[in-house]
Picture (cartoon, helix red, strand yellow):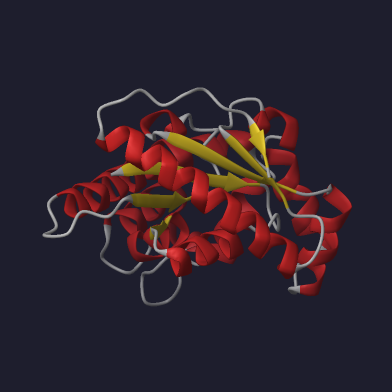
Length: 216
C-alpha cells in the first residue's frame, strides 16, 4: 500500500484533488474530518482545547467552537504552538490508526491518501511514501476563499501562518498546479493517479521509489 500525503495552501484545491483521487480508486482520509471528530464534546481534542483556552473556545455543548478557536490562535503565535503541541499528536495517532486498519483489511488498497493542510509544517509528510502538493497563485486562492464566504482578513491570517508554495514544493514528489478550472484539475488528477499507481506497483514488488519532482 502506497501511503500518500496530500497538502497545499488554503483554497489551493487539495480537497477537490483528494475527492478526484478517491473517485479514481484511492482510499482517502481527510485530516480536517479527523480534527472535527476529535473536537466533539467528550473527545480528547475538545478536552485539550478546554484545558488550554477554557470556555471561550468551546460551544455550549462542550465541543470546540472552531471559529472562536481560530480567532484566538491565528493572531497569537504562542497560543497556536500550544494548540499544535496538544492536538497534532492526536491527529497523527488517528491517521496512523486509519492506515493500520487499511493494512489489515481483507483487500489491501493500492494507494491510500491523507489530505492535511500542515503536512509540511509539522513534518508529518515524512511518514508517507509520497508527498503531493497542490499549488495556485495567491490571488487565485484569495478569490476562491472569498467566494466560499471567507473574509479577506481571515484569509490573510491563515496564509501568514502557512508555508508558501515554493517551500512546500521543495519537498514534494509531485506538484499539481491548480490555477485554472475543474477540467484541468481532473486531467492533472488522472495523470497523477497513473504515476501513483506505478509507484504502488514498485512498492509492492519491493523496489525503491525513484526520487521525482514532477509537475503535472
